[in-house]
Image 1 (spheres, helix red, strand yellow):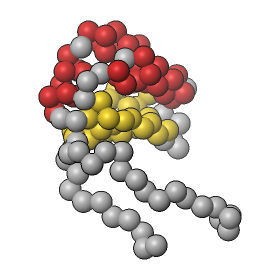
Image 2 (image 1 turned 135 degrees about the horizontal axis):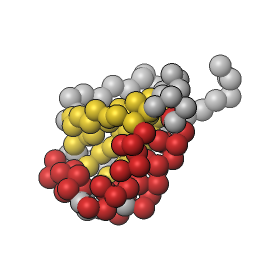
Image 3 (image 1 turned 120 degrees about the horizontal axis):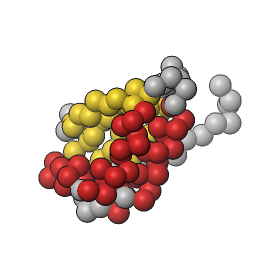
Length: 116
């Protein structure tokens, strides 16, 4: 590990209560990067402009097939409105042709930080 590596102190995105979506996509072999690109496009063009959206983070699995999405929404109702929006169905159709997914909603139970 590099000794000069420094990290910014953790700062919550919002102090408001949120609901967290953790969605794990399993891409067909060889399509992980394309699934990630399509998800980023959907977020940049549609999701981030929706009422109640807080943030989204994407992670690539080291297995070469998995993409995980960690997203925060202001409420379950805001998340449901997103899933019912026809624009989302339009941008997600290509994703679903290349990957299966397992979306789950969570409430934060606890957060732990390292000693300073």
